[in-house]
Length: 113
View 1 (spheres, one colour):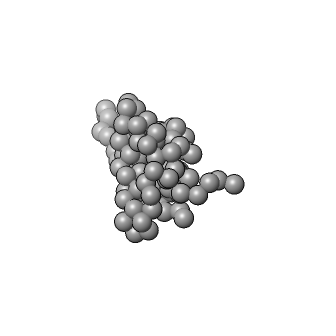
View 2 (view 1 turned 120 degrees about the horizontal axis):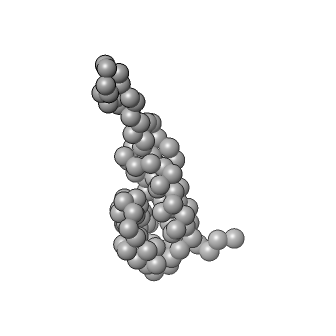
View 3 (view 1 turned 60 degrees about the vertical axis):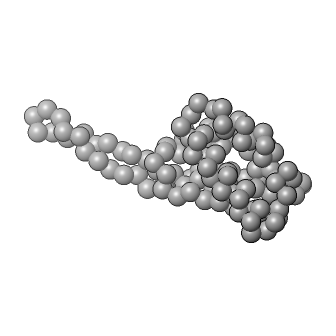
C-alpha cells in the first residue's frame, strides 16, 4: 500500500528542494529521518515534516507497520512564482522572483519490482 503526503506552496526553490529529495529516495524510513535530521539545508527540515506526515497517515489511516515503510516516491514540483519589485536608483525598479514548490512524499511497505 502506498500512502502520500503533500505540502503545497512552500517558499522554497524546487531546484534546491530536489537535492534533498534525491538524497532520501528509496531509503527505509529510519535512515531517511536520520539523514534529514542531520542535513544542513533548509529544505531538509521542510521535507522531514512532510515525511513525518506521510508516516502518520500510513499508521493512522491504514494501520501500517512503521518498521516496514520506505520512501517509495518523493518529488518537488515547481509552484507559482511570487513577483516582487525592489527600488533602484533614478526611479527604476528591479524584479525579485520568489519561487515556491509543491513537495510530495509517498511511503510504501511493498517491495519495489
